[in-house]
Image 1: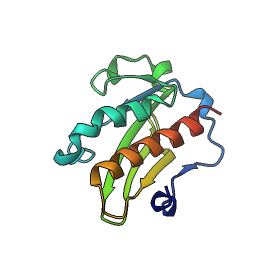
Image 2: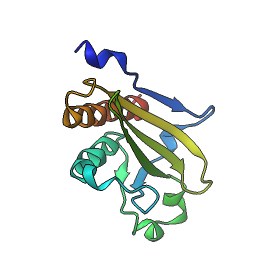
Image 3: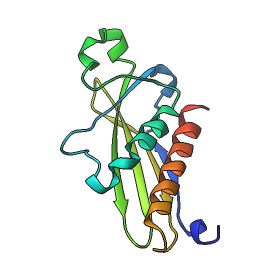
Length: 138
């Protein structure tokens, strides 16, 4: 518990952003935002973390099937993972589908100071999920 307290998990929300207008989210998983192969086993937990937003998940391949009104209520989620000995940080950025404007960045960080990479990634995923839940379920 003491080891993990040195890390900071946080969310940043763009000024004047009304998150209540958003109803849908899609996670982009392409060459730019692909989870490193050694971390793919955690992809389910990442999707679960995004699911804590309370938004309805839409496949990235089905975004074009949404009406214009639904697309105006769609956020794109892009993620990143930084795993170092000092700490593991998972970041999920939420971007407005129509404007491409980043609106929210949620970050979960965790460390065991290099004792367990597995525990670090699990802890960071749990914390980013907590940040997403706090941010979208106000």
